[in-house]
Amino acid sequence: MKKKIILAVLIIVVILVILFMWRLITLNNIKKLNEESIKISNIHYVEEEKNAIVEIWKKDDIVKENTIVINSDTNMTMWKDLNTDEGYTIFNNSNSYLIGAETIATEPQANNIYLLDYNNTIILALNPMVKIRTKEYDNKSCWYLKNGQEEVYIDKETGIVLYNKSEQSGREIKLKYSINTVTDEDVAKPDLSDYKNRYEQ
Image (cartoon, rainbow, N blue to C red; front, side, top):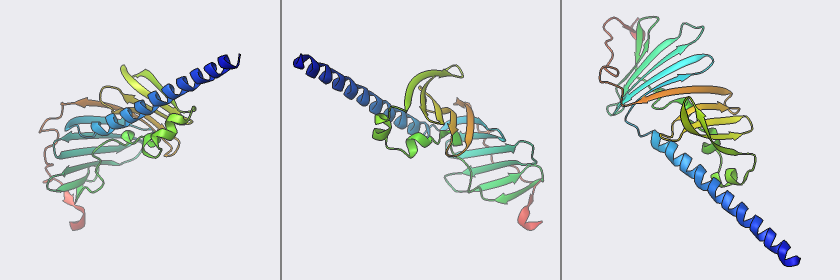
């Protein structure tokens, strides 16, 4: 009888160790895949939140970002050459601009995975409250991570976050993207001939 109990305990321990290792390896692979997605050189993102829509075009060293704040006059475009650091911030509603684009995003906010960025993957793997599943989102097979109010869908193929709900930031972001669709025209240096420099007005 005692041998059966010991055997049963050993089997349970082995199962728990295997489950832990699977969770740890999966989390590390998800993190690595997500980090690799940042290196994609030609990509277009459309990011939607409750109060804003952000589009990002990236082609090699050129990035363009357009932000529209809903129920506001804010319609701003930033353009930057990451190689030369030349950049402009354009205020479309007032036909004005500033030289520089220091706050331009080279990746969407949705791609900031709080769960993986601020937690040790070993601790996450050990936490039974952290869900790691395969789920479909927007017709794509995704890794689904959930811990309390933190909820993320990550495209299994590219590592790009398609949905990110974070209690920490108080944000809920939905993302669509397309790879190798950005043209030179999409990220062309802006023509500022009809715009005024805000410092010179």
